Image 1 (cartoon, helix red, strand yellow):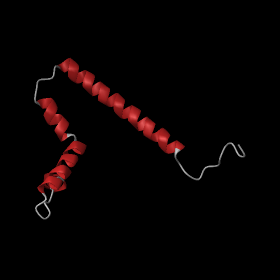
Image 2 (cartoon, rainbow, N blue to C red):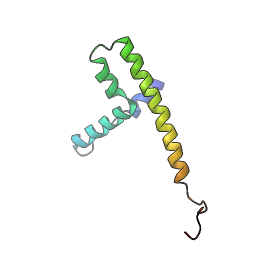
Image 3 (cartoon, rainbow, N blue to C red):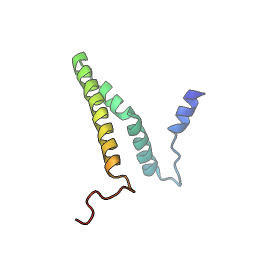
Length: 87
């Protein structure tokens, strides 16, 4: 059942013969899932040292982006007092 739900989640309906729009939606879904990058990477052999370096870079990037998103959300929150009144 889990495989079926995953398949349904990636199903794109073509509405009124607009195949280009459906193709764009499908590409966006596959890009979000990382399928396109995995296919591109598996096209050629990747040396183990390069694979380790790539995985370490991706992990560092996830941590960095998460931390920056947290900081931006903290700074952009609403309802806080102005620290410099009258300036």
